[in-house]
Each structure stands twice: as C-alpha cells, then as structure tokens.
Image (cartoon, rainbow, N blue to C red; front, side, top):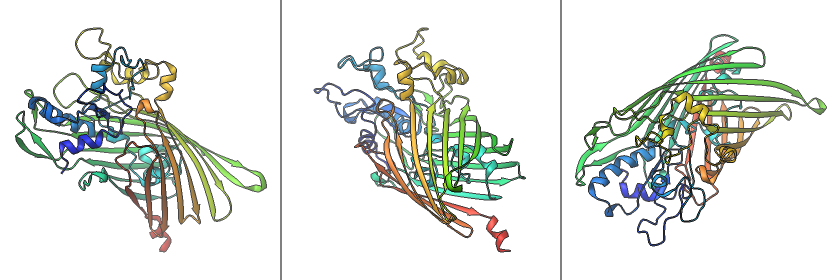
Length: 453
C-alpha cells in the first residue's frame, strides 16, 4: 500500500525544475512543488504534519490527482509566481502544460518504449492504435493481438500499481482494417482519511480507456484512420471534500491519423522505405469529478513522425525513426482572470478553441511554444525478421517537465508468438516511475496457423 508521506517524498524528485526553489529559511524548502511525469501536476508539501488536518484530507485527494490527473494546475506557481516570473530570481517560472487523465499519454508497449517512446511512423503492429491507427491499413498480417504489462513505481516497492494494454486488429480486406484496444491503469490500494486524520477505509483508484478504430488505404502509399474512445476515471468515488461528492470522471474522444509510404532506391540496388505519419489524438470533451462546471482538459495531442527503413541485405534491416509531440492544451496562465470569477481564463475555453489557442498562448512567445514539443528518436535492427535490437532517447525541455532518458530493448519472433522487452535508463537525477523497470509485450500472429495448415 502506498503511504501518503512516502508518495510525497518520491514525487518530490520527479520534476525538480517545475517550480523555483523557495527561500532557504522556508520550512517547506524540499522541492515542495512538483509534477507527475505525464503532465498531471500539483503542489505537495513534504512536511505534512505542519498542515492542519482539514488541509491534510484535501491534500490526500490531491495526491491521487498527482498520479492520475484530477488537478491540472501548478498551485505553487499560482501562489508564488507574479505574472509568470519568479519574484525572487526574476527568471520565468517553469510552466508545464498539464491535463487530466494523463494515463492516456503513457506509452503502453515495449517496442515503442525501447525506442524513446516513438511509434507514429514505425511499421504496423497490434499496438499501432496507441500512436497512429492509419498504419493498420498497411499491416502485413491478417489478424494480430498484443498484450502489454507495465509495472509502475517499482522503486517504491509497490506491487499493485501498473498499466495493462490489450490491443488488436483484423483486416477486413486489402484496403480496410478494424482495430480495438483497452488500456487500464491502477494506482493500487490507497487509504482515505477524514479531516481529523481518521481512516475512512481503503480505495483502489483506477482508470480505463476503450478505443475502436477504422483504417483505410486511400492509395497504394497513403492511408487514413479515425478512432473513437470512451474514457473512465475513478479516482476517489464516494468520498466528499467540503461537502462536495467526488464522482468518476467520464469523457469521450476521437483520434484522426494518416500515413504515407514512399519507396526509395539507393545505390547498388539497395532498397529503403520512408514513412511519414501524423495523428491528432484524444480530441474530445473536458472531464470533471464533481458537478462543477469547472472542467479539466483531456490530453489532446498532435504527433508527427518519420521512419526510414533500410534493407541491408536479405536478412538484415535497420530503421531510424523520430517523433515530435505537442499537447494541444492551453498553457497555464493562472494569473489571468479577466472576468473575476476566480477561475483562470485559460481553463474556460472550449476543447476546440483550446486546441487552436495552444499554438500561440505561451507567455514566452514562439520560443516557449517550441519548448512544449517533446522529441523521441530511436533505431531498430532486425535479423531475419526474428530477432530485434532497439534503442532510443526521449527529450523534454526542463521548463516543461524535464523528462530525459535513454531506452533499450529486444524483440523476438517465433512461430505465432512475438515478445518485446524494454528498459528505461535515466540520464538525470530526476526519478521516473519506470526507472530500473523491465516492461514487456506479448504478440500473437494468427496468420501462422494458416501457414502451418
């Protein structure tokens, strides 16, 4: 079971650059302001005992939000930053773009995870629904299913926090493919307390997403896809805070994607293939956990990727790939409240307007907009289409989350089975929930049954 105090200490090292350091004589000077690695954010004070018990209960629910996305603003910046600047140092405050239900942006499969979290333009497999469903139209198998298990925060000794992802597709004909995926995220057992610190029983927060996709070839080189998804987030259902009942959050969203493939002949009759892909994912309604009209954005994202595959010879292939992603969510500007309703103006935009606003609302101008783009690069080597070696690197600007890490992995195919492994190697002192964790995906190729017959 995850204790409140241990969780706070652990999270304190996740994103140390999210907020400026506080004064040396401040009793909360322990990197108190933090953000969970996948864009959920909140302020967590390490010295919990100094808070009043009433605030402690509220903070308990906030900590759930840190892990799963209930709160989407950096509260410490609201209180400390003045017009986006640190009044102590004069520097611009870190300003990570945040959203609710950040589990939707966690890379679920070991293959992409081994290549710096890329997958928009890589070859199609059963996990393509997470990155770019239009790739399914180019799938070379008739039916395929994948199951992935991702342990979460194993460094804390937690055994019941994990994400599971089950996905698959079926080719309808040479032009059309249908896909289905289920993503489930569990935070494990958490103890709820009242305003006096008394126990209110145990809870098991969890979230899930169900996605259905349709992909179609529009030409021999171009394909497009649409996907619809149902999102359910149960963080603290049945609990109450200041008389307000917490309910499960429910939303719906859609994905739109495309892929383009172009064969390129190199010298000495060497063959290669360039793939370019793009996807707008999680375009949908805001979400709330109460009856409040103040709703939170879900993590709408724009992703663009490219992959160049080289056929070295009959048995060896090598692919280089890169992805660029940007959250299409307004940059937090908590200091702007022109109508005086105590709700920041950026939170009151419609989802569609928020998408368009996100391209030019950063207080630092175009330079800061560029900082909101994350980059992943990766390479994949296959021998005889049976054994793969992968590696990659992921980068996020320090003021927008500061995630930086290498990743490595292996892949094996045998008969109807495929098995992928990935391992994250951190490059900073900042901790990641997947540090020193081995995650794996199991794939089933049902076409092999037909070949055996």
